Length: 93
Image 1 (spheres, one colour):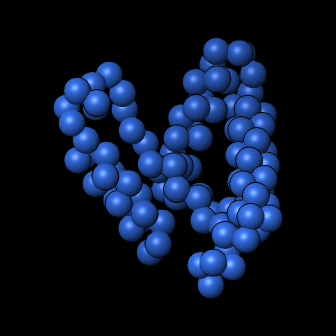
Image 2 (image 1 turned 60 degrees about the vertical axis):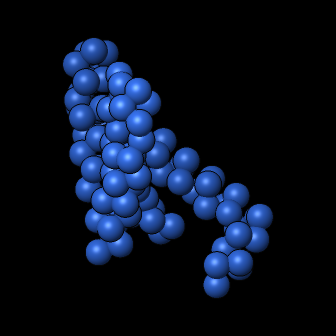
């Protein structure tokens, strides 16, 4: 599947960094297709983030998860619109 291949590719690229560059950070490949389909690790990361924020803010998990999903979808739509406006998609096709 495309999502799995892209996630593995990103992890492989980050694994080739120097040890000094990898120190003190954790990498999660956040892969989203153009039609707003989130990769496995992207979904897991949003769930983890929603759980932590819900506990921190004393809000229901479902409300926080809905808010995060809404923001992620809006960000994806804006990015896709930027690609369309720049003509980048026509260059690929």
